Image (cartoon, rainbow, N blue to C red; front, side, top):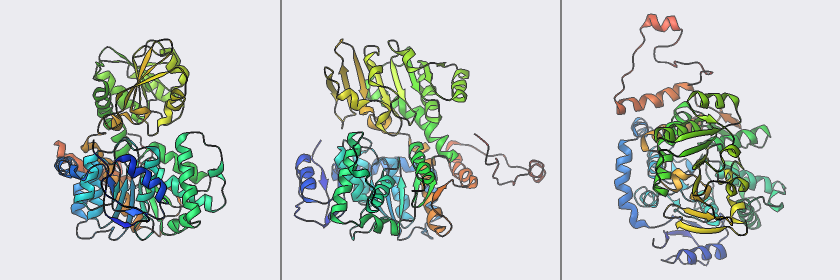
Length: 511
């Protein structure tokens, strides 16, 4: 796959940057840098020579992302984000490249990393580095140490300053700043026992930063004005911090914009889940028993996709309303335990942890496929599986090729784990189609404008974009798919008690 490419250095300490192996580069980073404090390079990606391919795919994506292109056109002269330092922690895909391009064309000074170790499209990262001249730190198949190093690099400008705004996906960038800030205030979390490997990596990073500069994160927070969050899980984190009185900045909940949650989560997953499973396994889905854990918007999209492919769909749920919805769509509603021994495909969509346990996997049907489309990898007990004596692991596809592993248990039965329990649609495929991501990312761009324009208005808390913006985002995409809106007459508008240009639904309306 070639060696990682590191661009020009702004500042180095005992570092030489030339073409090295991945191992050599990583060892240099670990031994010679104080992460997020000493080193700040232009970019670190897989291969800059992939930029031409990235450019070609970006051109296709631009055509499919009318919301972002319209936003660029609308604000071309005004540049409402001129000079604003924006850090992004979001899957480094072709679609994200168009979002980065949009933010830059709105005037922003952008730095970027991926929010998942497997989700980067290396040609997209190369395009961003070469053609947008944006510092990007991302490649497919990062280790956890490398992932958090990339996050810290994206959070640190060459002069040592941090971001003024953040585009977050899953809340990792927001988490790192908050945990660092709390450490500087005397919190003892970094010295506590870690529940998993990733937590240990985060704590190690924060200790290194603290040792070098005990006021680093306070300086970052001083300039930080807000964050816009992409995912259900990330939003959950934000509300949790706010309820505990720990949230340091205003946060816009992009996930619960209708044109995100009812589009990306539902229609995006409806297409990208199947893409991920097919690329990973090439299995025939028709006739299989597919178990979808969770029937929120993501679960609804996944169940619809699997049913459309001819699978018999079983849904697991904790919520009686969602369970009833699943049943009314013709799905069986059972528990995971009920399906063991006859389920063929398992998909977790909950955002919770421990949904598929080690005990479950020991009892699954031979050759069952297990995957996750929730943001984090803890929905499936992969760590416990890897630590179990007597379980043989065979790599079918490498991390860079899509991460498919076969686990064979002592009794002889096997299961296939996709993307190591991380997002299957990005780990084994390329994520959601451009058109649906245009909806999500237009919300992100508008959220960044809103936070910066109204910086004095917002206090720490979690906010939704107004419904008028939701409707505008939808409106920007209608022409692309040949839709034409009916216009209310003045009499009809008066009768309904709504403006002829909207908003057309009350805030409590559920689409």
